[in-house]
Length: 364
Image 1 (cartoon, one colour):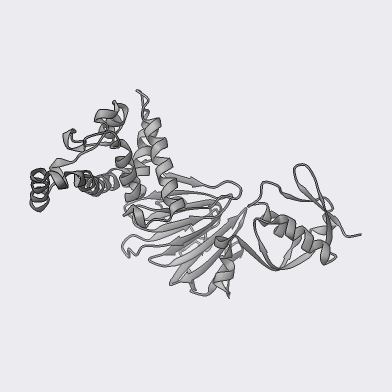
Image 2 (cartoon, one colour; image 1 turned 30 degrees about the horizontal axis):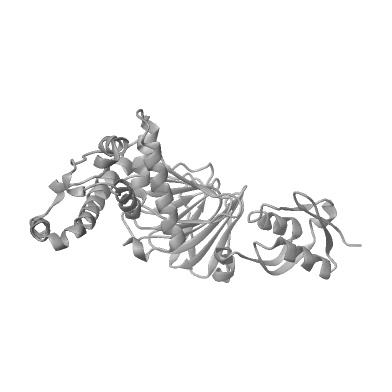
C-alpha cells in the first residue's frame, strides 16, 4: 500500500510515526496526548501502518500480546523494543487463520508473516479508532498547519484528501452529522470522498461551503473568502456569525440560503450576505499547487503578500504610493528576485536587497 505513495508524503508519515513513538516513551502520557495520538492514527490507514511497522522493527511479531485500546498501544510503545509490536490475533477470519497456519507450517514463507499482521492490525485499529475518536463528544480536533514556503497533503479518515497551501491552518472535526473542516486561515484544496448522508463542510469566519463529493479550493485571508470549484459542485452560504463545527449554520439572511457554485466557477464573499459567482479558469486559481502565482491586475501590496507566503526573504514596500501599482502576469512563487527584476524592467519599482528582506522603492 505505502509503496504507491509519493516519496515526500510517505517520508512525512514515517517522520510523524517516529515522533509519536518517541513521545509515547514517557511513562506518564496525559489525556490530550492520548486523544491526539488516537486522532492521528484515525486520520489515515497509512498512519496505522507506519506506526505498526516502526514498533515492529526489532521484534518477532508472532510472539506478542493483543492490544485492545489506545492505552494498550501507548503501553506497548513505552515497553522495551523486544515486545514493542502490536498483534491482533483475535481479528483473524477462518480464511486468514488458514493462511496463518500454512505460514507456520512453511518456514520458507514465514518471513511474510509480519506484513499479514500489519494489514490485519491496520484494518481493525482504523475501525475501532474511527468509532471511538471521531464520534466521541468533546474529542480533540486534528490540527494541520503550514509555515512559510511549506505545503502539505494528507488523507482524512473518510478518504477525502486535503492539500494545504503555505501559511495556512485548519482543524478537522467530524461528528455523526457532518464532516467539518474549520479553515482558520490560508488556502486549501479539497478532494472530497462521497457520502450523501454525512455532508462535507468547510467553515471559515464568514462562510460555509458544503459538498457531497467534489473537488474545490477555498482561500480565506482575514475577512475574505473565495471558493473555486474544479469538479462537481458545491453550495455556499454567508454566515452571520463564525460557524461552529457540528452545529447548524446561522446565515446572514436568518434562514439557510445557499448559492450553488459549479465546476469552472468561483464564488467570492463580497460583503455581508453578498456572494458573487463568476466563471473562472480553475487551473489558474489553483496554480499555487505548482508554486506558480498568476495575477490579473492585482495591487502590488497583495502580490507582495502572496510572494511572502513562500519565501523566508520577504519583499517589503517602503513607499505607500506603490501599494496600488497593478500587476498582471505569471511568476514562480519561490523566486522573488526575478519578480523584483520584472518590476524594474517594467519601470514600476526598483529593488534594494537588504540583510533580511528585499526593499521595493518607487522607480526613479
